[in-house]
Length: 212
Image 1: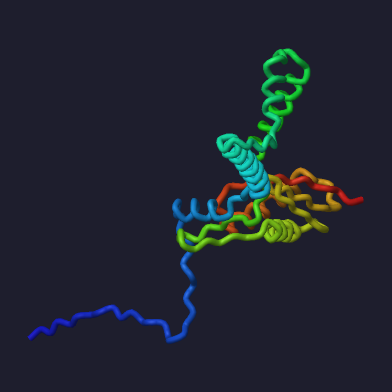
Image 2: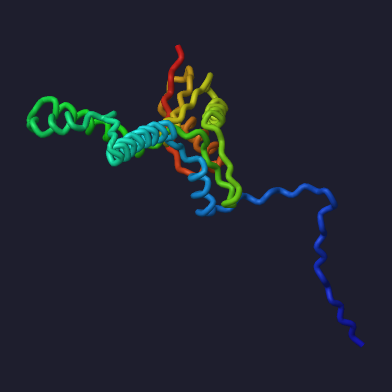
């Protein structure tokens, strides 16, 4: 008589209250886009100024139109004299050219303000969840990178700043082999930057300063 024994693998559950290591955040394009949109710098002051000017101009034109239709024009805008001046003035008149140049320059300035991104208040960090938005203050990131640079042997002190999408790191050292030393600092900073897992790509520039 043969007895067949069946072996089963027993999975041991961790004891109650045991701490499990959190799973690393997964890369999600939707989550990255949500974080970038949430912390995108806004141009509130120029937008408020332009909107206020346009609203005042619209109210002024509306008041002039309604008063003219009612037979009692307010004439807050001297449009009669303006039309007479425009009809008797040539395009080559210096006043027309200066006015056109100022208007064009003002439009270009407003367009540049709208297109050029402002200084970010927060640096988005990957979370893997579109509903979970995580951001770090730029000062916190630069301090972390400066601390990483200071861990390199030979670094007396380090300073990091954010300029656009570039972290500029300036370590101070007494060493002579500045070229190889700069590569060590750059590697340490890049390792710390990768550990932060920022959403947007950033460049790292290292400018070693010799202390005498």
